[in-house]
Image (cartoon, rainbow, N blue to C red; front, side):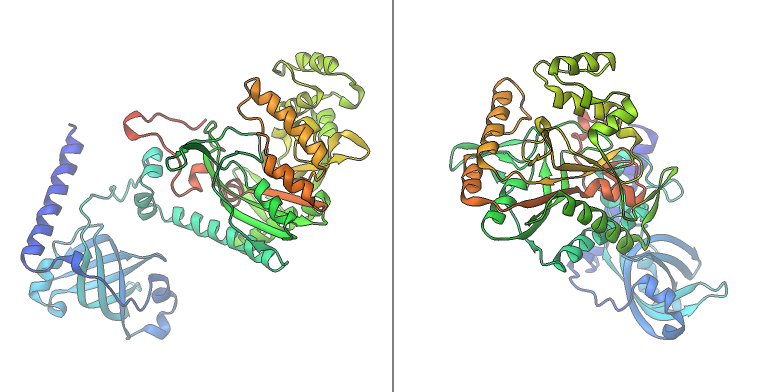
Length: 498
């Protein structure tokens, strides 16, 4: 045990002893159930002119404490920020003041008192009454150093939020972004729904699912990797405008841009196409930026990103020509595509077709250049098993992905509603799965049945909320915008961000 660990353990023991003493005096703070808080810190400070002289009730966590004999100043942190309180022995009484002197940093208290300003001009609450509401039995990080260990910050988000107020602000912005999505769609007659998280088939995306077991049915089930297929079933059923905001789960790698569980919004609109989805994407994202930040121009690292519509648009093939120097319009066979990949040092797997290689070249050579919001259109059919073919070139699809800062933040297409074509593509995916590709789509007979009942021409869109929040809050890691990111057990944890 280090000296530091010994010191912390000794401080924790002292706190336990203080709690025991309080209980023996009949002052157990954990028996208190309710506090009638009348004001919060920022309200007290900002509305001082109207509140001066009033008696109010505040409550929060002690974050600083300094005493001068029979009087002390403490700083109370609540949901909005911090405010100072002044505690005097002759005002609250000798007995209570002696108990107050045992209060620690981290303890949660109630203060009833008068609003005034100190000689230094700081808005303060002069305590007439102070009461311990919760005894903190742990020791918060030292105030000047704060909680700096990034791994520990993610594991103990509750401490992170106490010691680093900017963290709380990030999640307030996240909430505003999600609420703005709902506002935008609800005003346009979209219906919000909930679809199953557990399913017997993992469909709607090329991704490896998490597997669990249902004991009563004695069968394996999957955590959903997308909400696409159930939402399109609802469109078949007559919900012409439908959306869902929710968690998805993919049993894949972890990085600064990937967490195994993440949040997306998916929406579907009957009688619309992927061009309509482009309009919605740039408008809903710019709307959320304005709602959350008051601007469509944001700073991310050393770059200024402008979300103001209209966004740039370029086809995947033209983007490959621009950044990789290869024109796939001139390449007619899979064999020629393999030769191009070899010259470009792009790794390809056996059985890959021209369309797969176009996508690989795009990922290797193009994505990093897409800093400002850009729509990449007309993906190959091989990598778009749920998208409608482009009528002018059946090898391509009416699909787009939206990129910002080199990251994909949205994916959309004119939905494939031809059940015969869809079955053929599912069967091709099933063959890939049988040959060892555990990210390939499963064959979903019920979804095919729904298409046979009849899906109208439909536009669909999915937006990754976590990555968008990263961009709008200048956060370097996806873990910074997920309250409780996935972590290894502490005894086996190692650095995972890359």
